[in-house]
Image (cartoon, rainbow, N blue to C red):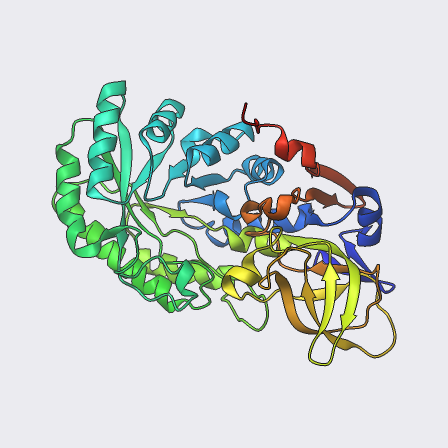
Length: 414
């Protein structure tokens, strides 16, 4: 179901007109649909219902407390990559026994925080990390459950910045070294082997790379079992893509079928770490046209949102659909939709046909993932508000920052 649509020519989030949201809360503003978030999570949970599984939402996609709390109430686990994300999940009511901790650079303090919280598992990404974790677990009198994140050298056929499973990537343990590292892990008294995992990238729109990665992961898991090492779970990471423009990502049900068929009758629990595919289409960035500039070569719609609010177009040359909040009659003109940040790279969209006038509202679609979570204060721009549409009502889940907020922790020299 599409939870963002036009009603009598006016774009709505669920039953709330976006124009009303702009009037009440200002722009730029991230707007989410509670129903879309709920539907996306339940889509995964239902698709894997016949398999022992745990959906661990990838917090980096959108770490807003309201989003985390909603998923926690739906029963979700969480995939974190920092101590800050751990603190957010716990503050949002997440169950620490459903948290997996990934990432290549876990600090000693982050490990101590996670051990004290009693998280489910560490996804270990190097020999040095394993040694550090074993030492800290010994010092704190705890046992750390671990899964090695292997690097299967599988090409996910996605943007190179978000491909994580190739041999030249910083992520994971090389496949050929994994068995020896598991043997070392078994010898550490405060380390408990819990599973095997991998993560090959993000915004993947084909099933074949996932299947190839799972085959390599299962091959290693079977070798571990043959040597008497218990493998309680297989962690397949995340990465299932969404449609931004003309992509055709597989349905979650087809993804589930492909993975579960490969698992066969193995007595393991399947961990999944979806991020973008849970929140991407559940949010948009609402912005207002400040100026229209018409030139011989290009036309610009200068809006009040910018690359500090949504960096994906500038960083990845990513495409986001741009829709007018109010449909106008008349000829559409090709515009570059740009922000006020002092960079030529500050653009949200290029060459989009729009019938707009100054003051109109635009919706930048599919901004629920890697929008607010990657936003910044560049040019001393306060970060946007966040609002969740819930049927016919709205909830402010993050108030708009002020310039005073940005300067509050700064101190001038004597």
